[in-house]
Image (cartoon, rainbow, N blue to C red; front, top):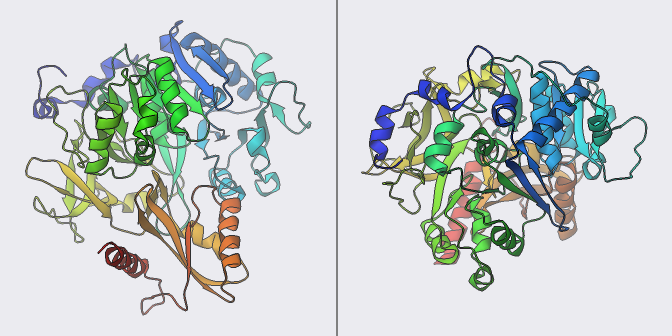
Length: 551
């Protein structure tokens, strides 16, 4: 924001002002209209490529027509307002078409990561009571239909010419046989449009409910001030839309402003990313710190490509060190802006590419997003002094991303301090200039490669192995991923073979990416007097080992 300082913008911010950026007259609000239909034009909305070299692009007009057709198809299957529709898709155009089509009906999209195994998929579909699922051939085999009683329809994205069994529906056959006209459902700002399951330290994952207002309102100040994108920019969205960061933060925020984004469907490959940046003239990019570490690991590779179009690089999901921020700017010749957020609230603390006078402190997560109040509190809920570490607590505000946990509002309400501040579970301190510095988790939740992983889910899978007696899972610091998952296992017959079997079990049943990369067999686990496993003690043991090995 030319001419204005962060403090001036923060003091003058008014949540009511953001509505001027939307086509909102009230009381109805439907994000499908805000993201796509109101931009009904031949401006490109999505550039897409995959690892096989296939590419395509879709304009806002084409996205409108295709999502209209899908909405008609869903309605013909009996999907109505409030019904849940699972999304188990990779980063393909059909993923974005599906989101918009589901929302047009007034239904609720249930986002499921394709790296999940059958157990994690089944749990999320059952917990949401999904009536339909949209997936592709590669992920269909992981869907255990007989365990999901509410699931009435499975819609599959196939390669051309593939014939499906009669019990499945072809995505493109439904699209091509449906009308291109559709009247978007009259949803209200507080109606839920999406569910994203987020892990906790105890119990199964909780479905964070995202209302239509949450799916667009908070994006406006974030896009303007944090990303600072203009209508001349092309954003490379490298994040997966199974998570709010990929779906909204660096994803549909672009469409909210009528701007294009580039999506790549393929395994992480620095050279592929560099080629795409050069080919499309990418100006802004959002990725996890893990990806940036790998991008700058080989400066010679980066030097082979013309990356001069890059203007703003953004990162979040896990801490980025001062060294990484400086190295990225040196190798990629563009500044790296770090941000902090959680699924329930949004990206609440940021560095600001859109504020001309903003100064980045490498290693700091920045300051509060305009319109958001943050405090740091101790274990008793008292605000700490500057320089002291406290838990990040966010005052409830009109731009909250989430509005509660699906069928668990008691749990949601317990997350609030004095009914007013949402407790994040993350620790930070504030320096003399008002900048926040992330220091770690206040609980057992693991952040690995930008994903939040609850240890109990992984422990539950490991305990199904007949040779396992007890298990405890923690996050261990790692220079590339931020943290890796480590399991301490009490076993009947410890062996390297058993360790491999445990890893394969978690890969197969839970997730291909969130599995224990290290397994240590132990005789017993540290416990409280009441028998509760003390993961904190295990983390402290690991930290002592790391310190002794580096000294």
